Image (cartoon, rainbow, N blue to C red; front, side, top):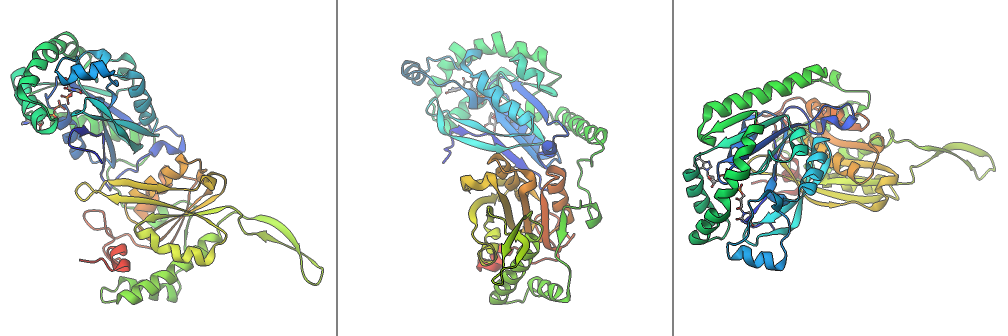
Amino acid sequence: MATDSIKSSTLMLRSAGRPPWYAADGKNDPVYMVGVAGGSASGKTSVARRIVQALDVPWVVIVSMDSFYRKLSPEESKQAFLNNHDFDHPSSYDYTEALRCVRDLKQGKATSIPQYDFAKHAPSTESQRVYGASVVIFEGIFALYDPTLLSMMDMKVFVDTDSDICLARRIKRDVTERARDPIGILQQYDRFVKPAFDGFVRPTMNNADVIIPRGLDNEVAIDLLIKHIQRQLDARSQALMRPALVRQFRSEDDLSELFFRVPETNQVRAMQTILYDATTSREDFIFYSDRLSRLVLEFGLGKLDLAPTTVTTPMGVPFDGYSLAPNVTGVTILRAGGVMEKALHSVVRPAHYGKILIVGDPVTHEPRLHYVNLPPSIKDGQVLLMDSTIVSGANALMAVRICLDHGVKQENILFMSLLATPHGVHAIQSAFPKVKVVVALLDSHISEDNLLIKAGYGIFGDRYFGTEC
Ligand SMILES: Nc1ncnc2c1ncn2[C@@H]1O[C@H](COP(=O)(O)OP(=O)(O)O)[C@@H](O)[C@H]1O
Ligand SMILES: O=c1ccn([C@@H]2O[C@H](COP(=O)(O)O)[C@@H](O)[C@H]2O)c(=O)[nH]1
């Protein structure tokens, strides 16, 4: 687990709006990249976070340059603990590794970002897997230093905060967050931090498009910056004849021919009524969601490509039919997608199974990947990806991306869900146009926080597993 001294790159989600990995169809809707440089403790991270909060864009990644500090030799490490190592020279960073990560993200791909532990002056053993983004913010003292990195940036920002204020903040932060002592901090500051700022960091101000005096305190400058980025993003969407970044209402008419909905018979409507009814007992809720799961699975399996085959009947007559898909992997997106597993076992065999656990951050609602277990054979066959509900589509998008990362072809993915919003399905289809989506019920009423289908069945997992508060 990350400790406080490990500053991680954070993936933030606005759950409405344009889907992430918009360029996944290869039609190049480039990722927007912002570089944020400035002295140590000038407020780079704080400004980057403010931009994320204000941008109404679904996926923004903040990549901290600290992730790319070079590993120290034992002697260098010893000196670092004596405050005698220069972490503020440009050569202390691994630009090749930084370029690898930034280039991946700039191309809309997933990447692994190393994590750095300030208390140990060493990279942590963990890295963070980041699954693509619409906007990447690259922040660090040398964010505007390397020419190749600069050439990938759409906007370059320099945070210019008075050095006394930076020092005061650095002392406070390094004592509380980076396990340092004040005397050592001052020694390191005099010996390395200040001279390097004057000699290497401040000159990169010349590479900036925008200079923000006083960092986060300069609300006017930050507001202008955010508005500019928003305008740029909207202009790009329009130029590509793509939907604007703002959230748009979607209807079934907006969905492609690879969207399939279980025919709405009276039986289906009755099951929907039971699941929507707040007074339904847990026993009934489980029974009818299992039944609906079987229905959507049977219906969805009808969309799989099957190979023709000929068998001989007991009467010795040849019969031309199909062989059931030989290599199918059923992948459930936990927790709520797990409810479809029972139905999967009852209708598909033999199948391989996989699980992906995605948990929404309680504050930002960003989906966080906690666990992936997919069989190696997944890449060669068809994949039934299952979640009980698709609302914003964020979890589904992350899950599809993970499958693609494991070598699955887009056209081999069949996403199945019990209840979806047209908005969420549209998000999947925009990002991954070859993925088939099969749902039992479609409902366009989304709650204000974009997390629940208003008229729907509440939090599916809680009702099914009996974990309602
Ligand atoms: N405008 C501000 N007012 C007060 N504290 C601030 C302000 N901006 C940043 N800080 C604090 O200063 C410290 C360093 O800020 P941070 O944004 O992490 O700087 P950097 O990323 O440039 O090192 C953090 O503890 C942060 O909370
Ligand atoms: O092991 C380390 C690595 C870096 N530092 C100092 O950190 C700052 C850069 O981080 P900011 O968040 O931009 O302040 C840099 O000035 C290094 O001196 C460190 O002390 N130990």
